Length: 136
Length: 136
DNA sequence: ATATTACATGCGAATATTTCGCATGTAATA
DNA sequence: TATTACATGCGAAATATTCGCATGTAATAT
Image 1 (cartoon, rainbow over the protein chains, first blue to last red):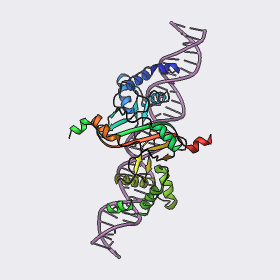
Image 2 (image 1 turned 90 degrees about the vertical axis):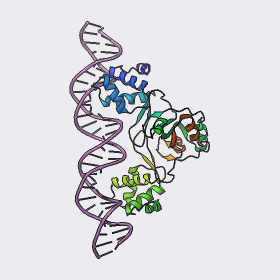
Image 3 (image 1 turned 90 degrees about the horizontal axis):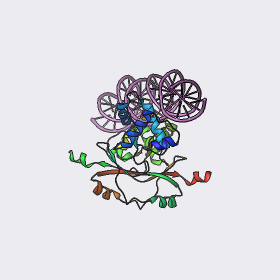
Image 4 (image 1 turned 180 degrees about the horizontal axis):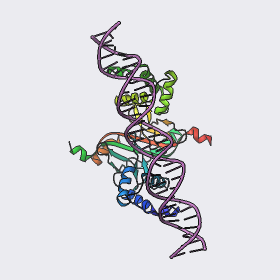
């Protein structure tokens, strides 16, 4: 990510580097607010707008994937910024990346049958994770 | 939908009936605002809050499917209120329901491999529809 | 090292979307 | 026709995100 920023001649400010770091090591696909909270641990004066601005930039550079949900509050993935299936726990809200080899490219088929030019896709499953199932 | 409302002893107000009708005949998965605009053609004093409240109710009754997107602004489907794939035109924003027989239940497989109890899913494709492709 | 400058930041205000509180209205039932 | 609990309309609140602008600072040139 840092390489990409450098390549595009964007400045490597401390806040920006920290946001990148948080996104890169994050598990479970954090919200903007969660990124904000972690960044403020190191740089307490950081503003939420800066977090959003940097996420937007990284999104545009293709380094971060944005996941929108009906309940509001987007989630971000800085590890695999390309389309891949997700499985969301409805209780603890964690989002994992399951392996799903059966889901090959239906895309080609779909393009043929609909006439659409398909650019990307989104596949999410919703349910209860093993840990939350055990809890009760 | 009206039967379902009646069965649950909800009142059949003119506004409610009109909202149901708009949702039932709508194509392309309207936004709340679009439903609001159509309902106001017949009942000009209808408030947006009423539209949201009724959509919420129908959602809870399982009669309307809500689709959230990262760009904000949910979309609603009153025709097929169960999980099914969508294909979204990034230009004209229309949403269609493609046939996708290849997408059988990966769900069972996923439950086995992840330990999740899967409750529902969401599969969307994004691209450019034939009409918009022709335009340029 | 220092100066320069264009990009970044922090702050609060603005937007957009959805929900809420509350007074009033009205569909369903008695 | 009266009753009553649910529904509506309105504006305000709650959320999530973006914007405007003054100030700060990383990168580059000197």
